[in-house]
Amino acid sequence: MLILQKTAGTFPKPSRRKLYGVLRSLNFHPGRQYLHKLVLGIETSCDDTAAAVVDENGRVLGEAIHSQTEVHLKTGGIVPPVAQQLHRENIQRIVQETLSASRISPSELSAVATTIKPGLALSLGVGLSFSLQLVEQFKKPFIPIHHMEAHALTIRLTNKVEFPFLVLLISGGHCLLSLVRGVSDFLVLGKSLDIAPGDMLDKVARRLSLAKYPECSMMSGGKAIEHLAKQGNRLCFDIKPPMQRAKNCDFSFSGLQHVVDKIIKQKEKEEGIEQGQVLSSAADLAAAVQHITAIHLAKRTHRAILFCKQRDLLPQTNAVLVVSGGVASNMYIRGALEIVANATQCTFLCPPPRLCTDNGVMIAWNGIERLRAGLGILHDIEGIRYEPKCPLGVDISNDVKEAAIKVPRLKMNI
Ligand code: KG4
Ligand code: ZN
Image (cartoon, rainbow, N blue to C red; front, side, top):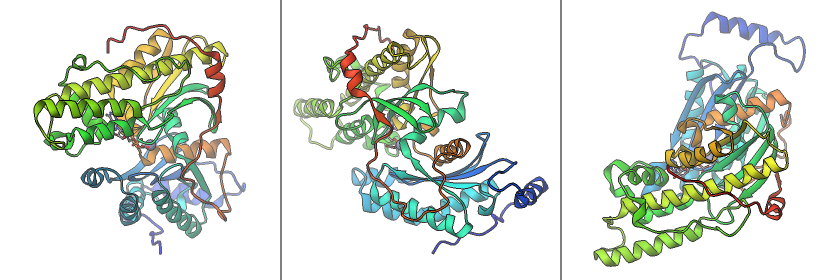
């Protein structure tokens, strides 16, 4: 049974807040609040248990996160029942810490927003059932959140960005290029046909045993690749970018993963070492994989910008390109995308790395965006389910393919 204190209690509240509470309780115009709206966001779609309270001006009142990365690194990947158990063990504490840090009680919330799609079924279930108990206990509206919509809208919390803008979402589970026309109005121009770039980087990092480097032992695979790549020479390996002939905006990373796997096997033979030992050329290979990943992402993004301009979906000058999701915290990949943005007269924006990886702030902010737009605010939670798979918006990738836009070559001096 869920037990959350009605008041956060641990901090003395400023008297202004008491006044706000009284004014809110008056609420003489039903359905409207005159003071700041506050949303509690809860995220459990993968391996982070996260929560935050954000107000309608984008101020983060409090947040807390419990990362499972360390546990999953030991098991060589996410084991869903383990992730579920860890979410169960931590969710109440994380939400309680968030409310305490925010110095608000659950009764002061305007709504609770929770990721219900897409993601790992067992993980989504923990966040959803906790949230449903919470909204029932405190009689609050519930706002179901699409995880990728939240990644896409994060930039509107950190920067003044109007619709439409183009977003590249790159994480451990997703890879897509989308035109964002409104809070829940997305046109998908391309997506990964197989695995996501973060998944590929995690697999390569694992195969290279990067966790054996003491400084990488607590890092996600992608972060470890970025760290090691700084000491490597990408030119030591000649790897071709995927899908060079396909004039669309789709992505593919599993071929690249297999090519790298082959190279590693060959190198292990040459160096006379077993799988699981660290290769002397690991840093060079990390640099090469990171470079090819960046080039592939940049090329597809370049085509997406040209397509959007050709169809007047984006303005000809000062269009905005956003990159978000866990892999977007990679500075080398950002560098490649910045080159594309400069060549196409776009403004390039990314949330800070801590808001690129999964967090509660983006979920709470998505709740605020939906609250302001009056979209998807549920007062009746009967029949609400999580959805492990769920596309984002309308897929126009066939139009993009038919346009077959040739992308001019760019000098990628990253
Ligand atoms: O968005 P996120 O936290 O979770 C998902 O929704 O998947 O992304 C996690 C992914 C992992 O695959 C991780 O290896 C990758 O983001 N990642 C990075 C970096 N930091 C995290 N990839 C490349 N460079 C980084 N610095
Ligand atoms: Zn994510």
